[in-house]
Length: 408
Image (tube, rainbow, N blue to C red; front, side):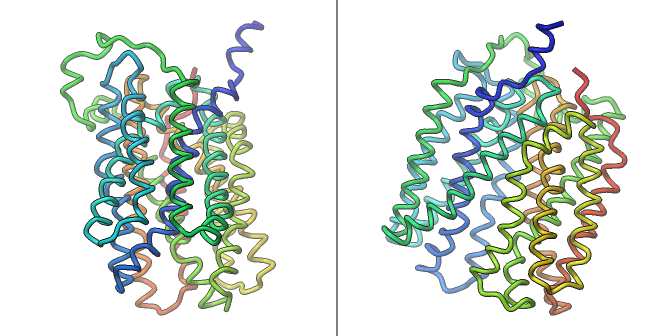
């Protein structure tokens, strides 16, 4: 009995080391989203065109991340099935990232940006798949909490330290910092994270030739319905989240009269709360079940965001956003493990790709959809009708999910 209890304890050290890949990825994306629009503005005057270029990562995520996640499932090398993608993609991304602010022409800049986004899509799903590959099923929510905690800390570092470096030495130094962290993260992963050995014979030749949808088609009908309902819920709640993330500063400056810096700091209450509750949210999911935890989170998000339509008091806003970050952690931390629970151990990368297909699709569709609604109503307050409606749609979808809890 003692050895069984030991097996059920999460290896925090190993999970922390696996999280370095997500840490580096999150750091790069935070710097990318903050500074690349400024780099593009040196060449372009059109905000709409800059915004369009900034969606390249989402389009590539939708197209290529499911593909390379599935390919990694069917890859067998002496160093594992995920590591080849990480070893090729991550260092090249680090090199290209440092070059972004150095490009002298728009043509060269676009070439580097497009190649960088493609290579990020090559290794992100395989990197995320490392966690479930190396973590027992029942501990994946807790492990995902640690991974997301590291990602959140990376974003905070990008904003605080990256901002200070940019002020002192220029934006090029901030990009260089991200590149150095990326290389260090790859070295840590290679030295300390060892994949399980898998034999090529475990995957038939027919399976090797099949595409990313074959895993979905092979599922029993009831599991397939659950997965589809869960993926729709993921699309809906990321539609709500991405609209808020994209337009909150516009709302706060327009409706609350805040400066851009103060608006960003107000939204930071939500982000910091998410980071603080990432690990507890995973623990809660392991204790009471992932579906129940996500349902509580969705109820909470609807309850927190709806009153914001009527409120303009900053103190109340801060409190609601602080609580909202906790409920968002309950949703976000437990969703990927729930998707992966419906996969076999040979399909982790493929199902990770499914998750990112729906979340990135929301990141493409939702800002455009809310932008259209705002243009019609001419009222940024509609953000707090739009977001609760999509959280409610996610809640309805998750009710129909019957699978995804840890069974072993």
